[in-house]
Length: 81
Ligand SMILES: [Zn+2]
Image (cartoon, rainbow, N blue to C red):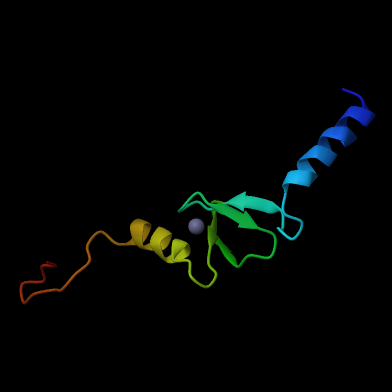
């Protein structure tokens, strides 16, 4: 590969990319969707990155799945239905 070839391929790639789309910087550990430069996120101690912006429940869902083992209404015996 030479430098001229690399530049040529980059030019082709840029032609198909919308000009105002920010670069992808990570993939969400919950939904596997792309995370763009400027997105609001949360990062776990293990280094997982999650969407946390308006309209995304990824960080909450990720935490819920790893923190809780039951969800619902508790009854007088302490059972969760
Ligand atoms: Zn996500």
